Image (cartoon, rainbow, N blue to C red; front, side):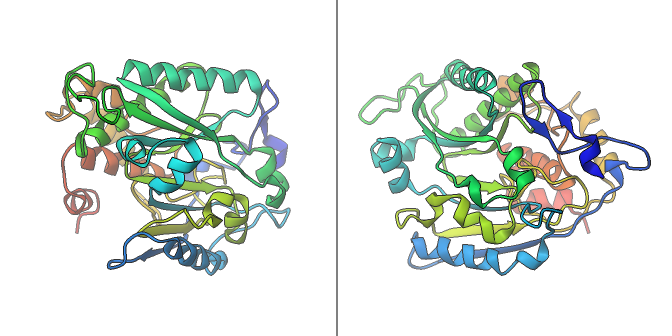
Length: 347
């Protein structure tokens, strides 16, 4: 059984994704999932959109797999617009301040010493990249709804608000970032992308892999809630999603059937840009091609920040996660989503 090959971290945390062992090779697995989107094109943001998306997710439960304990799912999640009013209340910030911020969702180590190191890294990198940490929040959760395997590998789930220095309400924006750029619109999203990649690379240098330091989302526009659930457990685990102030104009939900990697908290979907249902048969070729391209890649919009984004494809991800890595780079570098999809999924 897979349990016979589990790795146990020195600090008491568990890794439920075994490597190659005997006849098992994780590179030979395949997947199939279920997804849905709910959007209100007229009335705008409302809690009913989120509520309907959660109902759609519950109806996708048959598209996911369940572990031997009959309670641990392969993964489920939701991506939606950041509810500014909700985070204003929860983080004690003005609504206008929240709209100027990037909101990050973090899966961090549960062991106290490791958690302290991870949180310090987040603050240090934010300061280096021209952000102040305007808010920090431990996300309320209900672990009792989880299966045993999901509960044992559950990360410490936190959220942080990152405000570009100089963008406080009423403050002049000049010189907000070290390069003098102004963080509005797409420029802010690019800066948050660089910030996240620097955090991830810093975490790897400290010895944290994806299972102990993962950023489901860091954006001024969207946020991702996800985890190692059966679909019906999802809303019960995250009380935030039941709050009437948690409003969005759209929501994407995903129920995972993990056959290309073992279930884990980071590999649940949606990812930051996509929700993917299917498998990529040329995965190894595409990953190697992206590694080779890094030697000659450049970007006018990222400029000197561009090398901070490498490696583009994060090791340990599923085929969908790696697709998301590349799609995110292409769109953040200035291509329209339609253009990026035509490049990545040719006729």
